[in-house]
Length: 117
Image (cartoon, rainbow, N blue to C red; front, side, top):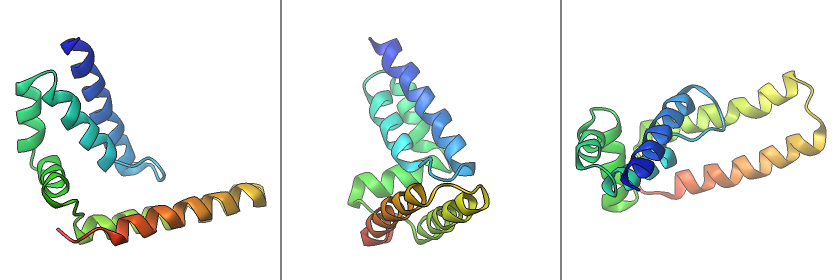
């Protein structure tokens, strides 16, 4: 079972890395899930992700106080704002565009409601 948890954790890290570059694919939830999975499978991987120069502070901020750093909020906002623009460029149907805007607005409200780290 530990190998399964570790494998899923590594997949989550991979998805988080992809999410840095792909709008609508969130990085932080995948990192938090990876830390959770590593804690149940491998102390070495868990220590690695917590001490990672980029990932560690994000996980620590969230686990300590549910906080998100202002820079991360700004980057999330920029990538979220790019999605409707991309949808317009690709001529996505209006219903889908409106659905995206509603969902992404809720995501932004959640992100900006979190305390700053």
